[in-house]
Length: 136
Image 1: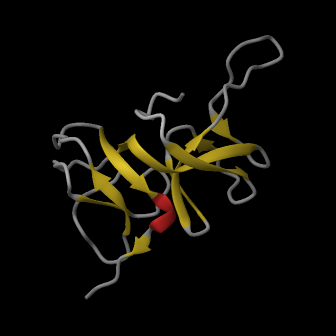
Image 2: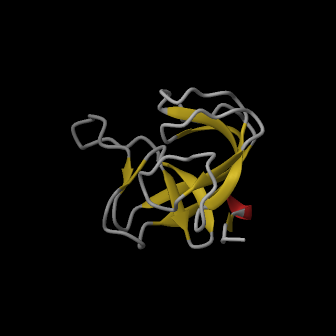
């Protein structure tokens, strides 16, 4: 199990990276069509038996974890508390936030407190039920 998963209960889908020529890194949030998830890749080894990068390269297969009770994701420099909504911009490499803004995706809720200085946060991910928030 990857280091960002803190549960045995999760749902995923397989995909082939025909969406971007930029490699998709293990553990990063990714928007695949209408679903947000965390990319997970199997350990890859070179012909010499050395661990290769954990990226889904162009035309390679990957796994998108779109639902998980407890999954760790990168966050912006904001404090987050359990029960707060979690939003993501849809921009690869960007961290999540609890600050609402038009155009952000609501991807779940925070399940463990995180300080502003923390690099990541533990969330309940509902990536298959995302909504892109619009201005009221």
